[in-house]
Image: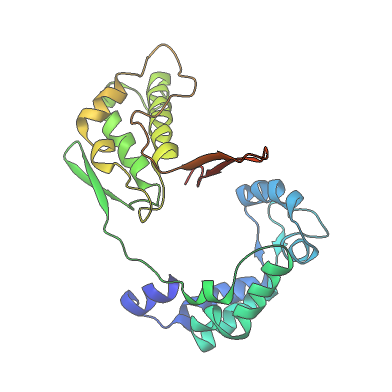
Length: 253
């Protein structure tokens, strides 16, 4: 993606763009508080020694303000800067990535990387109080933000003070409703037709807004539009007692 954007829209060369990242990776950078907190959650589940060596300090997550290095990443970026994006998707770097994945039980192949392509999509939008707001389409999550704006248009936020509890309650409930639809419908548009026309219609947003009770928080709201036939399921059995129940799904997309 970076290479595509730089080549099509950029004013700088790829090497110039990567130079700051190479410097931070090689010379180190102070870990921010929120990154330190998230890092502490994932460092416990790093599955191999190489990952622990790169992404931990002696097996622990870095503290906020601690200097973190990733010299291997700097080396990779230097190769990409010198040879171009093709260095990542082919050649020795590609082979090393594939070998590491397969050595740990994965199924990635060199052909998978070679077939990668960047897809440029058309933005989706909605209006919020006469302002047109644009977002990334599925399989991105942008339609959830647009759904929230549509729902919130039913409420007069001008009557609330900035820290009003009812203001935050309304926004939280709106987010619950939008995410219920997001989790139900967001998927790869090559394989599932996301019902954006319905999800982003003002009529649908009004129905969702009507579910918000100013006096009570919702539990886990259900999506407002039934999902299409995207999940494949079959059950079969033979005369010898062998039975198979099979479901093929991307779960949450």
